[in-house]
Amino acid sequence: MIDILSYTCIGVGIIFWFWGTSYLLVKRSVLYKLHTLSVADTLGSIAIIVGLLLKIPSEWPFLILAIIYLAIWNTMLGYVLAYCSSSIDKNE
Image (tube, rainbow, N blue to C red):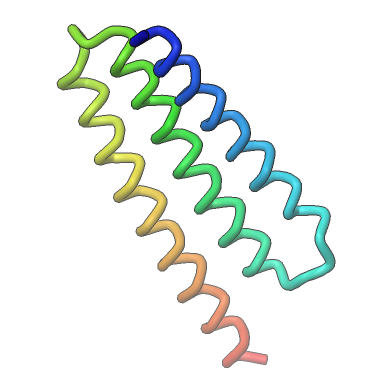
C-alpha cells in the first residue's frame, strides 16, 4: 500500500512539472509564466520528495530538510524576480 501511495505522489509531482512547463507556451506576460512555472515546479518537487519519504523513511531528516529548503528558495526567488521586474519597469 505504501508503494502505491509513494508512486502516486511521484506521478503527481511529475504531472505538476509538465503542467507548469506547458504554461510557458501560453501568450501571457513573462511574470505570469514564471509564477506558474515556479509554483508548479515547487509543488511537483515537494510531491516527489514526499513520495521518496514514503519509499525510504530512514532518510526522513534529509528529505524534510529538502522540502523546507525548496519552499524557502522558491519563495525567495519569486520575490527577487518580482522586485527586479518592478525596478526594470520604473527605469524605463
